[in-house]
Image 1: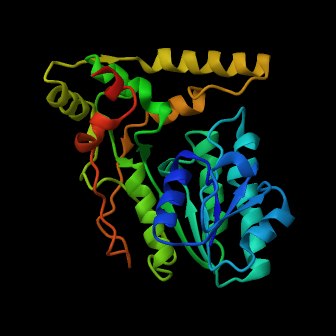
Image 2 (image 1 turned 180 degrees about the vertical axis):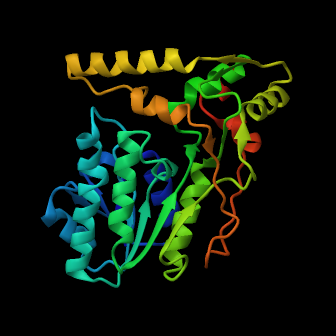
Image 3 (image 1 turned 90 degrees about the vertical axis):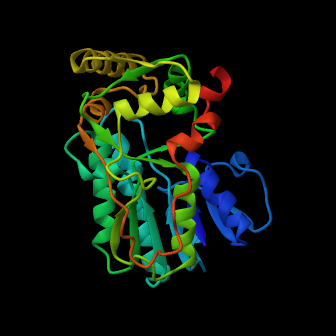
Length: 306
């Protein structure tokens, strides 16, 4: 099988589970040293904009798992370079080799609201390229993904462990979550069952119906730390101002934009990021095993502070 994004947060967990189940994997890497050598792993050095590398990657594969994606950028073009053009390049490589290949595409729940941000629009555009083909494809839209080795959300868990919940969205907002191990196991299950969920766009979460609200996070943290947690809301106006300043500063210095930019702010203040995975066609063997309640103790920031 062929894999992109193997060195990323989700990719590392997917690769680990594929290895555990005995799959032989060709992984597209910018540098062969990005991940440790292991039995059954063949690194293909290259990028998504290099047709020869993509051709080598998919040669002889029966399944392609496309995890690579851009999560930061100055504008739509920066995101689309990977999320749209990179996806198109990979699809073209598959079409030239074997159109019967299974194509598992990792998108984002943000693609459900493409008008909110350049990131969301680029992920939706990448999805549309996949769903427009007549190949054996499946698209996954996970919500916020968290896990024990994700430094991005460590400040949130650290603040929670200290008794503070920083609310960055509206008080009535609800959102779904999924643990990275459960997302990885879903992807591996779709690899193992070539006909599962063919031609479907799937939204995956941890099976908490209706998702989480800010008060739910507060109660979970209070139960875990046996102490009160105080919610501190940041107004959308302040968040928007910070986003504009961050993006303007990054453009002046030509440094990589920080996570909080205007598009991300619009995503944060959106009130509904709840998804439903009660019906996953042909994927009966997959069930999420982790909830925030069971995973909290192992999350970075929390485990170092609580």
